[in-house]
Picture 1 (cartoon, rainbow, N blue to C red):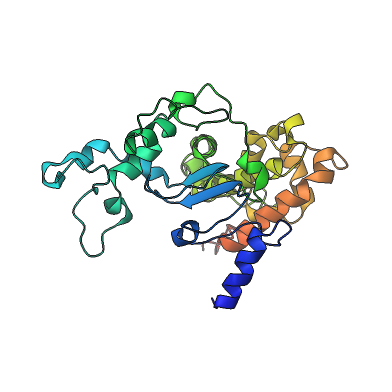
Picture 2 (cartoon, one colour):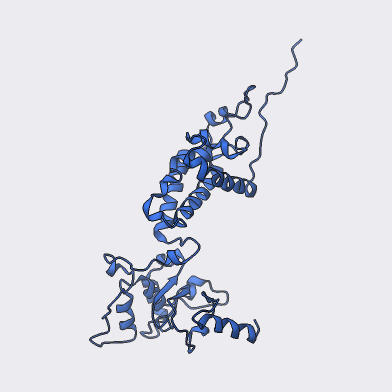
Length: 309
């Protein structure tokens, strides 16, 4: 990026009516540069407590789920204890060390601590009588679990934030659908038998395909609800129930040629709310999925046998 481009971007970000509302930059941009009226400072990955987190507003740390599996005891190996340095590394680094191996104890503690304000005071050896005072919201650590968060980041972002609770709920629904899908059995193979009047009526998707499509529809389902400004006044299941999603995903793609084919599967009527508002969107999601993961079609029509002589 040229110096001219960087200068224009910085100017548009700092102006009150500037066109740049979100600035993606390295940590150097946040050191020694004044950015007035910044509401959110987001760090991608574990950060060190000494790093600048913004003068005010909300500080957000985006980290991967595996960070929660790291144990602080792993930093206390005797060969790593050169001092009481809170920033000591996870292990001795080598060429090509992975992200997990480059973590520091202080970085992990800043994520796992029950209270971030209390941890920072301890890290900087701040013993003042007012170091833990605050007049607004502190943090979402376990020490403040009973205090509701006054700020919804999701309301300010165009895409879905897949936090721990959302992902756990999605995994639970997918696992439930997987158990209902089951494994291939002789009965399922029998369903694929040829029917002269309706040759494809009994064809079903294989369990692996069903599970992947269920997850795709659940993500779409959740996103559609979140993007509705009136989502607080109606529940998510009014779009499509979980059992209806599973029923749709069991149907072989060859039997879904138009949005109208979905309606009898989930017992919805033509002209109803679902048919008017959602069925075309559901069909689009399914067909896009089928184009990415095409299903092989096998014609089970029995071959003619020669008569015995």
